[in-house]
Image: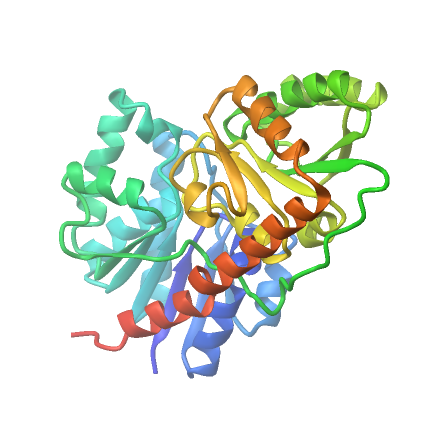
Length: 367
């Protein structure tokens, strides 16, 4: 059996979207260690039987001194744990984790969970990041992608040439996220957005669309769930507070179980600017709710446009309003049927067991 080290930027994300993989690796007899910044989900990861190494770093931005400290931490962990395999997730663990693994000749698997704004903007920082990716991922045993657009982008820039594989995002646990009967619409139609509150998740478009629809229709509600990104709090907290005080939206804050509020809602809205593959949309479809989502890679794969949801132009409040009106004029039974079609879609394409088997296959042979 193998010693496996996992490098990622969020204990919460690892637990919510990959705990089944951790459990499967443990049940297969592997020793699993996790390097991650501290948050309240660290205890949950330890409870699964994983060895935890708290490794703090800034998820966003590039500070050479601080990033050098992260490289040193990863280097130290490799020599302390002496893993047979390293799994990396998210941008900095992919780049710096891949870098130290390559230098130490440790087999590693990278998972591209999204490109991020800095890479997509194609400025000086983008060119620097691409050079870093080219080196860090040059010796990866496998690079997993979550959508075809990300894979095409990387290949066009000389990354992941012949050592890549597509995954259905993080998949969804279909037993844990079961179908929930569509709620009555006696009190009107409830739209819900679950997001980290920041510009790139489409918060401005959602709030603008809520204001517009509230002026047109009395029987609509707009719920918002999610924590503020600290750099965005000053900008959006006063605006959300004002809209809540006037009854335009209901702000729920961070929720531990998004499925519970999805079950109380009729339509899930996801106006994100970029995604690896949206877990919000997968969970929405799993519980049987129609979706409205940005027409981008990472979103459109999760539903059947016109059957289980509607896509709309990214970064456009007007397009979101149009999509909301499109689903608003449907009958209750039509919306219910769209939700059922979404459940069937994820059952067919996004079972989380697909991801577990992909990792098992990747580490079969260390040669």
